[in-house]
Image (cartoon, rainbow over all chains, first blue to last red; front, side, top):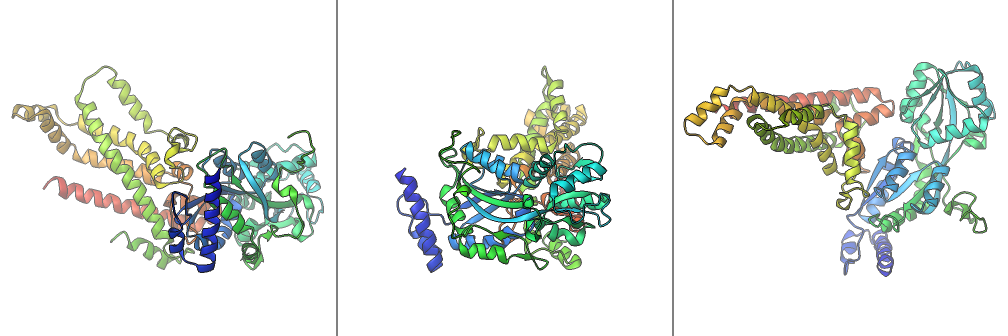
Length: 310
Length: 238
């Protein structure tokens, strides 16, 4: 216990030294007995394809790597696989976007210290011709129900990603069980799904970031907006970050994971996230820095110490 | 043409949308992983194939079937098995091999070994019995006889090694799973190979860049083949 705490303090101290002096030699020098100095270590981050493929992580990670003298191995897997890697102890920190799956991960004890990180939104895209006639609908569930009724082609990610999870939740909320020839599970990434939809003149659900970065390549338009453009709140796409519980996986680099979480939720990094643009459009909206205490971000949604389930 | 010239040439000709050093580092990782895996496979497979070729024992047919079946292993299944082995939860978990080049080498070793063993075995078996008998008759030991057979079978063995290399460098399923397709933030590959880079471009719908990287991969395999054939010709007959 004391060793852990000293290690953590050493990591924080090293980070402070690095940020003020920018001098990695001092970090190496601070390594007295066998407490770990972070310099030279590697942080393994498993994350979703949307944060990676938009180029955001490469853009901001150099800041963290320079500050601590470490390297970040970002593995883009999709939310389901990213959490599974962490469950197996093969990651130190996870950045994903499916609150239900994150909550399950927390409840099972695999994750600790969850923070809300940033958000963007989902949009329903489809061909300009809009065969089902959903353009401008203010309800995402109504739009999906309309697509199902018209049996217009719909491409599903089908890969247990955050976007796929959201899509399934939307169908459920719409009271529709998708199936039949018009509904195709591709089992592929967002970019491939968009291409697939474009070629078939099909509808699909996309996160706004990936759609913006691919828009010039595909023949699709946004037909139902998400909350960023005044669309329904149900299309919100919040990203969370949490450390792998060192009590479950003792080889997890917990110190560095917490340094990373501290860094990415800091005002400076949150500024860089909001400043990141593709084709002149902002892709992610930071939400970690807030005046208000938001206790729900630390615990499974709806959890309370009074409730009977914990 | 030297290998180093390929990425620069490709970048210059095609104006690839990558940062400096990206393509060359991806090529380096591809070659490092596949060549190491094939070298280890060869060191393992050739003696095994020679032993199998020379020895007569019960169950030899069964061993041959197992080796031949191994040629058909789907790479993604091999990736899953290696991941299971090296994962923190697995038997080799304490070595921290997940998402490293060493894990990628391990999975490509598993993939390359069956074709190298099977083709070497076929080549060794194809050497005339008389050659072996002559070597023994001239007072050679079993080792001398084996070396003579290996020399006779050298073209077949070169083919075996190239088949193993082709299997290793072109597979995407296992290196993606156990390697994680990682580059550092400044765009230098850590565990990204040409095949996983192609997969990444395809995932993003960048089919043209994916095709160009595919052409780089073909050029690379062609170059390695040419080098092996060249050394095979001049090296063994000297």
